[in-house]
Image (cartoon, rainbow, N blue to C red; front, side, top):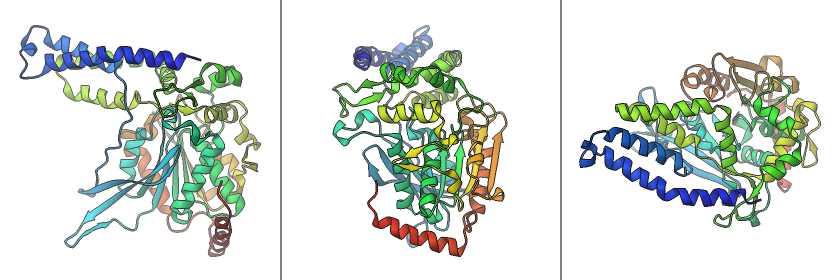
Length: 441
């Protein structure tokens, strides 16, 4: 009950020591400081910075994407908020090209909605994904709000609400020319949203790319899956759900705190994280500033976590990891049955990492067994050799192996999506017009 409060007290108690260590690290490493000339100054500075980075609080990072290089030319990028809900902002990254007369937006490239995970980290974890996609696409991103920052009077947020948000964003961007990419956790609600829209006769995106997600967690279960099945739902509600302390706007809201999720992340590979911090200390002592800066960038992102709304978290545990309602064909969202076989006009690409220890092999590929309404020729699966979970959407493998295939898949369906004829487009257009007259959920 008071775990979150104790965590905040501990964080507040630690803060002065962390800032003191930061000041020491700078004093013993600054070029103009007499302290930096003392024997052993490098080790003192390195130890203090390591202490500071372990003890400091990590704020939400920024995307910090101000330009993108295309064919050797740098184009400016502007980040804009195009829609806002209590628990999510829809961001648009607009690229521009300079000409002699004015600044004009780059035209003629397909729009892509990147649905970021709401599973502990901020959407900026997909910074590399977004930056790479900007070479050839108009990019939108879901930027989920830390639940502790959402006032309690704004209501609850459930997995059903997540699905409704995705539907609304697809409609607002315009499904007719849209391609949707979901990474990890949102593969489930994204597939549900597109299934529901298809069943109603609404236009659906031209293509759907599902990456490393838990569509069917009965396939190759991982440690994450096993934890969810070994504990009953009441255990999660009574042990990991806590009220937000009074020092945040969301005071009193029930959440799954980010610091607990972060502890779980670290516990999965404690030896790797310990060695990473030890190597960071050694790099600082040796003066290897490039490797030290790489460590800072990674952990600035990795250590920045957010709180998840309790109802959404518990829904996900029950529906996705315990009862497997989506692959069993038993999932109802706001009273409507989720039927992936209703999707017929959207091409499907699934991507898995060979060494993924979060979503095991076969879990994402299971979408093909469910989406039987999509022609076989419009479905594709890729397994990336040697890639872990993060490698399929970030880093060298993403840029050199995964992205070219995603880009080509989207390009093939940018003009004529799977099975979509003029007659089909006209009928879905009429359905959409009718749907717009109905109040949104």
